[in-house]
Image (cartoon, rainbow, N blue to C red; front, side):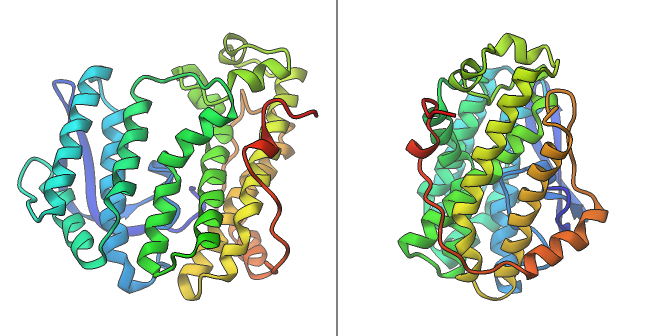
Length: 320
């Protein structure tokens, strides 16, 4: 999210050459995590020992996301390029980093070797990005959660792996935070994504409020759309809060980073609600003026009972 600090690492410039994305590297500059919203840790609060691996994972995920989303390549070309990218990942895991993406896979190979990063998590990200190339519609929340499990949750699990945290409760709480962040980004970006044909509101959610996806793409806020957004905001908030006990289990600077991430996400939800849930025409943002509030809320986070959350608890058939 744009409210979080920036991190210096090698510049990643994505250029479109004949419809195919390539990577060029240059001098260092600050890169905001706003470009790749699923990446929750990328600031000076990240423990120094973790930074090279975190930056390597970020570069890997960011370029894959760009391959799926940016430029003029067709969906078929993007999927083919992502398949090549997956092959490059397998080679990097065995120490071979030669090829067009050496700037990405050389540091990633070092991180894989040093930290024994789970390759399945890195492949899961590519699976989600490949799905993005078709701009699919999501029938219900179960389908959308399946996407989040591959597009967002692997990042949190990779970071916990780097921190040496692997117990079941921590992993489930990390999943809740990452899915919550993904949902928050979806609802924050409705006014941007819908005109581009990116629709993350499920068909079942829209139908519950007498709406169809064509009506949403028109971008006109209405009583029905505001009620829909209010419901989606509540779902995202409940999901995020289910993961908040993790901030008390992850120690040191990473724990404080996590607190800021959680509070930044919750602040976006606050702003959507403060704007009357007119999210089809308005995109709330976090700016520097919000930082003191985020810091104070992060400082004041207290241990509390974990809210029960699961797909069933937020199902599309739930009675309002």
